[in-house]
Image (cartoon, rainbow, N blue to C red; front, side, top):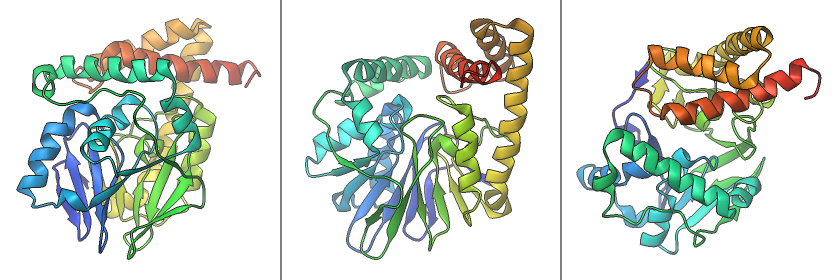
Length: 301
């Protein structure tokens, strides 16, 4: 079952934000941690939800970034400026990217583009949301864990969606936070998002399949529970194979990366005009995926 409404998932675990972009709050005995950084436009909703749900934001002393894409780091600058003592975790590669001026420019530009698309620019103008060079943190990698005293959050490296992607897993909860590395539970399907390297994306899914999952905590379109959560990664593996075959077929017909990306984008938005990303951003994502798949077909990857 897919749940897209913010609220308590189970004791010590919350889903917050919007249906299209959410974060997770893990409440340890003495302190709390946010997992994932969402899109910047969810900040007003978070402030309201902390109040409505009775969440003590003073206990939030840690924040884990799962990868550095603009729609997964949006609340980070605001949170850090509100609480300079906040400890922020990400992969080594994510910190490298988040120090690049061009990456920061892209994050801010894409965040504004999405806010314009959904009519949130004026609502968010009251908050300091832009990334600058004032956010630093701690690098984590495969095998590390973040200790909240009574809860340990385990880190797994899951590249493919991006070069910097990591996932988090809480064994006692059987909760997986894979961000887009696990596939996106859009409507009643699963979107494959092997943006940077589709082969590594598929390999990461195979790695995640070994975990026991009661809660599949996605960053877009909520979380999944019950039997669907248990089977979600296996279904995501099947969808990735199907989507890769589709991209290969179109590329073999066109022999052109740009033409293939445009055809895939047109077909997707014809069926899903309300998808969260502007069409030009999605076309860039398709272009990245097709470029890797074309290289693999040509024996260059």
